[in-house]
Image (cartoon, rainbow, N blue to C red):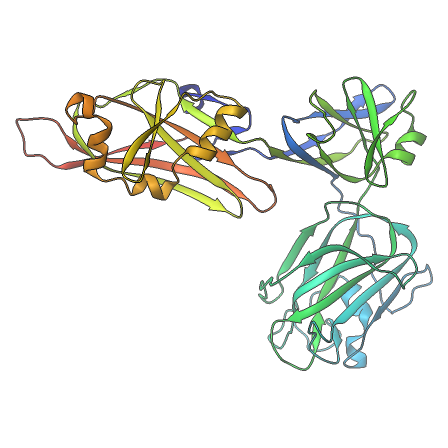
Length: 424
């Protein structure tokens, strides 16, 4: 945060040991008349909202059928000591037997295996956990679908995972659900396991209740959901309307729904909520030039950055804070002015240099940037752009920028030095 005053930056850029995009909020709804609400960041493309709860959707099971209407079942059972209910007893054991559900063969795409729980009532879940078996002979799921149904015939895909090889003994694998649906039957439909052993097993399958319904308010109007579509709620916002039109998990495309003003999340109950924002492209521009008069030449620049998934980091340089430059095919190109807004960020994402391209600039090419000063550095500043499309999987982070330079002093032996920029 110490670095922030030195930059003109868009609203989702944060400086906390690195320069990155702020996508996450955790908030407690506060009393607001007869309801509870909280303002959420909405300057972006999309928001995903979920109520935070640790309430298990399934009680501790000691048999496949309970007196209150919960029924565990499976495609097959390896042995009586591996009945389906053992995956719902919330116990992790190193015993071989009564520690997991096990099917009678290894699941494949051609011959899947499934573990199922039927509930007395249809509910929404916000997240789930798969707990790996805690002993070395486990054959844990690698690829699967979590599915929901209300009749046991038609199943709908809720969440899909492919190639998750977190097979550490006893590991707890957590997964969020992005869109809520209410189902009375949930099943884990497994299509790949970690090895070719003649069984499939799940140590524990934990489902978590999605909690209470929420709606939004924007521009003085209340909005809820019908079949996933955003609809305006007429009249006063009552608990009955929140129950009817609300969801415990929802996702809103802010651009398609033309929501540009402040968004509030509203519920008739006080909830903890998590908000994921997919922001527009972000930019941070240094406010002032750094003097390079003490340098005889720039040898190289190293921008240490992380780009994961569809995350992008781009950079441009300037000598005057007006005209910004990138190196293309060995020639410095003027990409014009850059502004600290979405338009400037999108322009830099489109035209800027990648960290690798910046790192590939030679001393001779740096000298070309300063050709009007006989190739000798005078002043320099940087602009950085960050972009993500999915806050769950994408990362675009800058750790530091290091310039390797030669000192301009004429009375001592020349030696390379490093000039480092970090973000605090």
